[in-house]
Amino acid sequence: MFKTIEAQLLKDTTPPALRAEFWQYDFERLRTYSLLVYCASVAIWVMFDLILSFQGGQGFTYKSVLIISAMLLHVLALVFIRKAQHFQVLNIVFAAIMALSIRLVMTGVLPNLHPAWLVIGAATILFSSSVMPLRRWSFFTTLGVTWAILNPYYEFDHLFDLRGSMTLCYISFVSGLVIYSYITTRRAKLQNFQMSRLLLQLAYLDTLTEIPNRRSFMTKAQGQIKKAVDARDHYLAMVDIDNFKKVNDQFGHDVGDIVLKRVAANIKASMPEFEFARLGGEEFAIYLWGLTQAEAERRVAALCLEVRSDPAQYPVTISIGLTHIEADDTLTCALIKADAALYDSKHTGKDKYTLHPGSAPVDDRHGRRGTGTQA
Image (cartoon, rainbow, N blue to C red):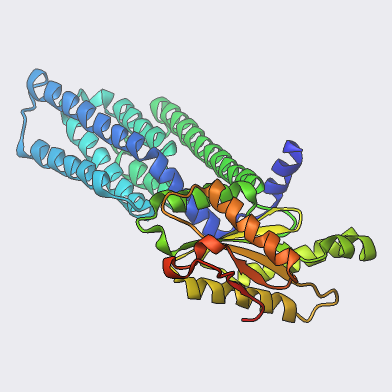
C-alpha cells in the first residue's frame, strides 16, 4: 500500500500551490537552522580575519568592520523574515558577502595557497546552501555567484597545468556533489511533505463524500468550544437521511453512496463557513457559530429545503436536531442534546428540524418545541 501511494506521488506533477506551501513550511521548519548557519559562518570568518590580521600581520582594517556589519545585518534580517521568498534573495546576497569576505582574508595567506583556500571557501558556502530551504533558482544563483567570486583560476598563469587540471577536477567534483545532494534532498523532502499531506487527508477526510470525517469534526469542534469567548451564539446540528435503509435495500448500496455524496455536497454548499462532517453511516454534524437562534434555525431549515428540492434521480429528505451550546457544555454533552432533538424530528414526521427544548430563550423554554418544516 505504501509503495503504491509512493509510486503515485512520484508519477503525479506537484501543483504550484502545493509547492509554494511546501517551501513556506520548509523555511519555517529550518529557519532556526539557517540562522545557526549564518551565525556560525560569521563567527568562523571573524576568527580567521582576526588570526590573519594580527598573526598574519595584514592588520584589522575598516573593510573588516564593514563586512562584519553587513553580515550581522543579514543575520538580523533573518531573525525578522517570515516569508520563504524573501529568504531566497537574502541568502544570495549573504553568500556573495561571504565570498567577498573570503577574498579579503586571502591577502594574508601565502599566494601559492590561495587557490586551495578559495576552493575550500566555495565548497563550504555551497554545502551550507545545499541543505538550506532554498528554491532551485536561488540555489543555482548562489552556486554561480560563489564560483564567480571565488574562482581560483584568477590565481593561475596557466589554466591547464598540473595544478590547474587537479583544481578543475576537484571543483567539478564539489559542484556535482552539492548539486546532486541538493536535488536529491529537495525531491525527498517534497515527496515526504506530499505523503504527510495525503496521510493527513486520509485520516481526517471521509473518502466517500470527500468532506471531513468524525475525527476531524471532533478535533475542530472541540477547538471552537475551547476558544469561544461567548458561547451564546454557538449551535450544533445533527443531520440524518430519512429512510436511508430503504434506499439501500431497494436500489442497492451504490445508489446509497450516490445519495450520501449528494447530501454531503448540499451540506458543504449550504454551510461553507462552518465546521461539518460525516460522522458515520447516514449521519452528519454541523457546528455553527456567530449566529442568533433565529439565524441558526433559518440555516438548518434552508438545508432541509435544499435537500428536499434537489432534482435528483433518487430524491431523499433529511431530519435535523439542533441544540444551543451552553457555556458549561462539553462537545459530548452538545452531541447528546442534538441527537435527542434529532430523535424527535425522526419520530414526529421527518423532513424537518427540531430545536432542543433547552435551547429556547430563558423566558420561552416552557412548552416550546422549536420545530420547523420549511425554510
